[in-house]
Length: 218
Ligand code: 5RP
Image (tube, rainbow, N blue to C red):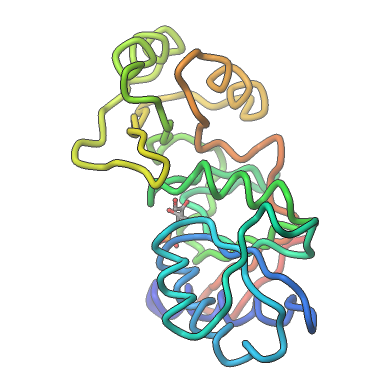
């Protein structure tokens, strides 16, 4: 199986976690796009979706799936999203698609985070994938200097403005030995909106597309 087939298989497996008449939290990215396609087939069985980006909202609506504002719903069962890296502890780096802040918000409201990935995303330690940090534009240089002090090499993702009107710094060469602590430390820098470490609230279930089928990690 190639990488896309593995993504598609993991996304299809996530459909079995969707409860009848429920609200479904929907992430962002190429793996989630396959999930959205599958969700369209069962759209009459669910209440609606809550989306983590303008891109996913556009795709959901184009397929006739109702999208609700997060403020108008209470807690819901599941949030389905991909990841750029994930460890055996279900700590993740996310934000390759610049949607990390809304992803973290929607994930926080869901009871369960169902992570859908192909097996290239599994790593022994986070950090080979540069850590995305969403930053208020006027704080970009200050935050970059603070990230240097933490041992990282921040690179401005030029030409990218997030759905929230902010910019992204991709931090290279971080040694992420304690993801929970680093997530907290980076979020404490003034001007940071959020960072792409999903460690304090990691995944609950990981569905991994592999050559021998989808492996479920709980
Ligand atoms: C977007 C994300 C995505 O979940 C992550 O980048 C993985 O994307 P893909 O499924 O395309 O590999 O965090 O902000």
